[in-house]
Image (cartoon, rainbow over all chains, first blue to last red; front, side):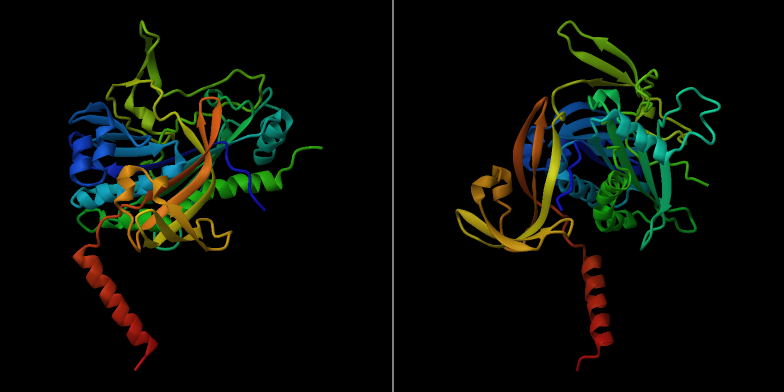
Length: 227
Length: 181
């Protein structure tokens, strides 16, 4: 059965560590052969400075601060390109101490049905036991469920379910995001094993990009609209 | 205890609102101020805490930055199908490839692509064994939606000496474990 595709989607990778924002210039990406010359030439620079860098290329947005790098795109046709860019950045900067990494995927479905939208919120977070005696018209604003990463990495999977924001123009939208969070293990001298991050990104990429979908499809399968 | 370090990005797909349509909308904007320029350009002044989406973040960076709202990176993509592929053989006009459904639902198959499907910078990367991704979906440009097929080659870093020697060692150990003569 062909599944309904999400109406909106976004992918991002967050690297937490000790970074030098000033080096992340499109020219650096070109010289390191992370971007093709034509791709680097088309990059848009908002700011490149020792404190903060923000550039855009290939419909991706890169933010770098001294403690955090975020590469994100709404063009999920290029999700693996984003993955390759992050892996290449880490490969070119092997001495960078990375203390945590997150692979994030956010999807949204336009339900276009107000009563179904409420039904999902009330099923995920029933209001009668606690909230109805205390609040008028209680509604689910956001729900985060945490699980554990398994296999070769110790970390968390954080899943958030919420109504879509008005800015999305989805009148009754369902927002689901997943965050595969990997705190990088450290040795006795508190030096992080940063080389594990590339492995984490490569091995957990697919499951990380499937989790939000799996949650979304399970919600839509298990909670049906009233006839 | 939950970690105080978050690795969630602030999603521009938006913050959430309350599920009752009659309630006032609460939007936790990361933007602190916006300035509308004479040409209608909106400049957003954002505090760096905007990159965190969880309340557990205790120490937001307070580096102001200016973000101009532009039409770029506003194009969403509704993903219908993704194939992981690798090139089997190539000639001047076409290349044939083996394709595996990224979600493992559809059967693997072979296909032939015209090189013209590729952007110029990607064409130089076509050679036997090269991995690539083929996505099919709808590209959303404002209120318009158009069918799109996107092919790009993976640009993975070269194997390091350490990875090669680790791989060789793993292969030797596997061969010994199998016990072949």
